[in-house]
Length: 188
Image (cartoon, rainbow, N blue to C red; front, side, top):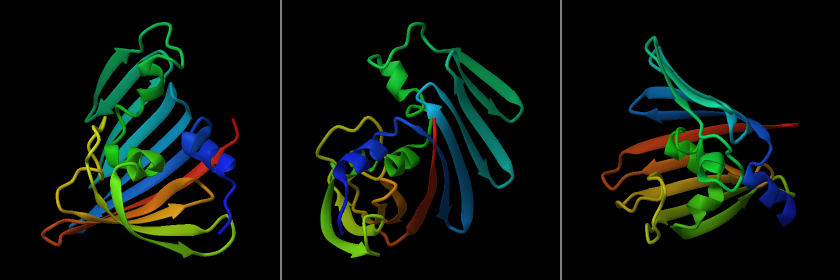
């Protein structure tokens, strides 16, 4: 498999606009997660589970959370620029941590012990299957797949999109959950 590393790094930086739809299935219950981002301060995130929906959004000036008919608002600190933490983590602080780790696989792969790697498909738009175990040897800004608790991970990395499209998590007791992601880049 040949990969244009410069193009791939541009994709995983997520500096452009994109839409993501993810599903999480555990114990027969499915939840759907939708994230649309124009930039780090203009995004909308919606979670639907068992007929209930919650929505978070940022319009550049205000963070908004709507759930069960109630709306909560918080102003985004004035003068936010790309060097301030609020700018680059406003949606990361809100979106479920497992979705963040799928959209930004470099964060995840720095904290796992890789047991095997297999190519799937051909060309530069193929997939890579990775079997791994969380190491947890670095402090993480969020807890997600990288927490070391005896679980194992089956990861599917879409090299063309620069993100994980599937993560199967098998816990130490054998319980299994599956996370899938559809990601579409938009032109700015």
